[in-house]
Image (cartoon, rainbow over all chains, first blue to last red; front, side, top):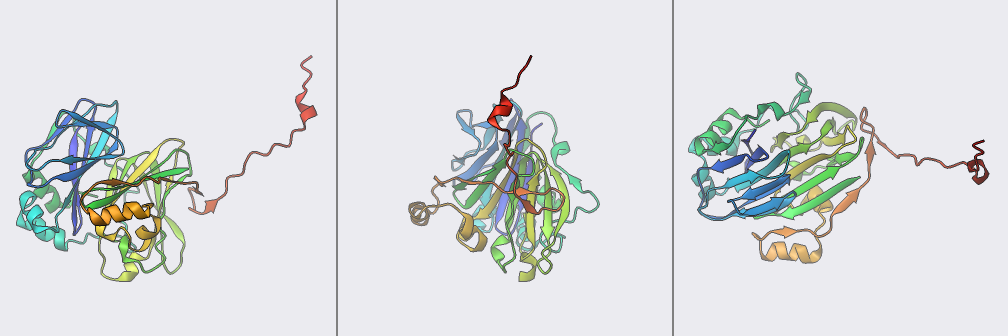
Amino acid sequence: MAISKCSFNTETLCIFNMLDQGETIDYDWSINTDYSVVVMEGSVQFQNSTTVNYVNEYRIQPNENLTATAISPGRSYFISLFRIDVESIANQIINEASKNKAKTFVPEWYEYGAPDFSENPNITWKDEFVSGDYTLTKTLIDSQISLGDWS
Amino acid sequence: MKRVKWIATKDHLILSGRTYYKNDELHTPDGMSEDSSFANVIMYYTSGNTRVFTSNASHNVWTTHANIQAPFGCVRPICNSVVQYTGGFGIVNLENSNAAYTVIIPKAIRNSGYWGNINTASEEEQELVNQKPTETVVFESQCFVATKRDPDTFEIYTEEEASNDIATEDLNIDWG
């Protein structure tokens, strides 16, 4: 049940990755600097060698495609963090339309800073995940940003 | 009981909180001050069933906002006026099982407003983050907070300890 979902604000692109035991998430792209990933639940093996348990950080090295496999029973979650307010980083991951949206987009938030869930007061992402391994492409990231598919 | 761990990553500060019991408070950035540091926060619920409350800054009354079953994520954006930063926001664990969340804030605001008040970095750790701004620093001090919240009103309450008013002689039960 692996999948990656992109959240963003004006400074950060955060990719939330969920996978069940034995499943793998790949990014078929890299950037020329290292970046942080943080395991939030479970245990994840990165690049087929380093196992990171929750709650700990790991660095994906420059020009390295991310490969992550969940090794603990149940679901594992990790996030990947990027400073998209830094032009040189953003240019390597997202297109111009996504950059502009991230810089300017303010969703229809609840007046006091939280989304309006009045029509659906019981919310979760748990049903959005699909079986099997998953490859996150830059096209998918741009698509998720354009749809605002993050809350 | 809530346990909180802080990690300074390459560019961000990560706050990861976990509770274990029903009615434990997970997170309450009490935004009653005009504190813009609440903005631009990304947050994920990674375990458990929780209830989110919000409060109106002018009335300070907690209102049920949503029940959230992990996983879920949300973003608190930059708003147009400082008033929009000032609403309260809180989460309570609805079950006697793990409920966990992670908050991501830019490293640059780690000492601003609310975040500066609650982050547990020692002076040495602060210095390390300043001197080596892209280095990972795990704050050694992990805070433990024991706040209980009514899941219907979000009011704080004190859990009464079971009173022991049984006299020693009453324990000498004659089982026949």
